[in-house]
Image (tube, rainbow, N blue to C red):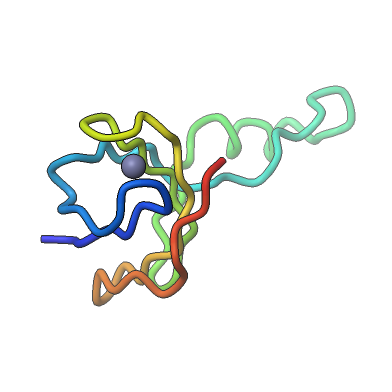
Length: 84
Ligand SMILES: [Zn+2]
């Protein structure tokens, strides 16, 4: 189980949080993006191996959205959470 160090509440187990997904690249402008790149943006979900920046919502605590870096191979949190 992950132990997430909320900057407002301290270290809490992941059961108090809701995963919000990876921090994605900014939405491309469909007017200047090729059809293939636009379809890929809409349909392909990134699933990287290694460090990923993610959103987590402390739903059973302070209610803040946080971002943190987690290594998807080890589940180690490699950078302390920050408020959004
Ligand atoms: Zn909190």
